[in-house]
Length: 481
Image (cartoon, rainbow, N blue to C red; front, side):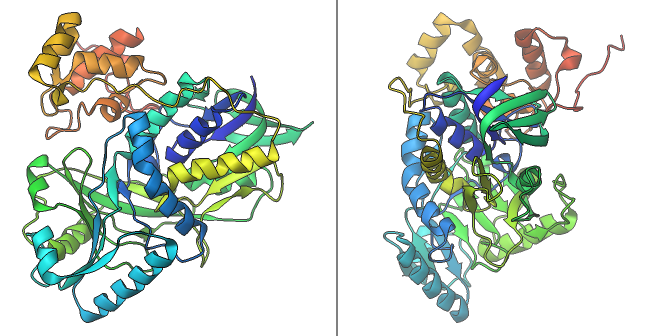
């Protein structure tokens, strides 16, 4: 199949860029090596909308962070994605830390971050009653927030598909050839031809770039481990709480999530170049998270942890380590979007616009469509509705009255919607990310088998073909009796 643009990688940046390009009168395809979108960094990160005081002045990170933070509420509203503007606090425990806050404040001011303040111990304690007695002040950034990163990725993808974009899953790219002004991308699902390519391959972006002879950057996978706590703990923290940052990143944080849990982490460990699939948690890493969080909120423990996980950040192997967003010097029709580590999620809406401008400059022949659909219809969320609203929906479709996931209150109707959506769920984890079935306290212990049954029925395949997350993650093999 021939396309005008092929976007490689279906993370949050790939999805937002594909949506942006679907505004134009062109054929665009997003290629993903996994069985679903949001399967890499976009499903395993801190889910923070950063205010923008961390990135060095004058960098692309700084510019796009602040722009992205200001755009996030707009895009989440358009795409019906959970977002909360709760603000962030960088907590100081010593006078040296207070000096660091001064540096962050000045940097944020120069980056254009609005309404920041350095606040006293007394005000900090009013804002966060459970904060450690050793905390002596904080940098308050009210423009920070929290978002659901995988839901933003899914929503942007669905909106792009509604506007005519294609998504090809299980289509990892393993070779690229350029001839006759056309890229030939060899993928696991066949050869894709495209006039332009946008490389959003996350930790694999350098390997994709090398396929056209571009060796201008190298990605180091930086692993971070997390604990996710039950919703019973959400009274313990009101804002995003950071410690003072180090050269390895923003440090271990504590934050509410957009759905009411509490998230703790991440660690920051640079892995070998060949360890780009290592998302295993470790005793050492999780202990580091526990010890660090204990110094922020002593009463917060992992007793009510419901899961732990790890994610990888695409860190550029460079002293500057800025985002790499530009046409390749090897081929001006190949745009690299690489090194999108934190604050990449925050910057994603701005990155999409930035890439859209680059594309418009190198391909001005493509004009914007007049029929672009900018919004995504909100999925039915039964546990957010009034009794009267629930009754009305159940009267029309009884499946919305059958609870499948007791922990999160998710119904059969919602799961069917997720499967039938544009670029809908094909596996158990896909249902989980779209509906939260399996994200509660029991982590799918009770509802998992029912989700498998519903997937098999709606996809019209045998149950032993349903996987947890594609590839060889089969849940059932054969009947034993």
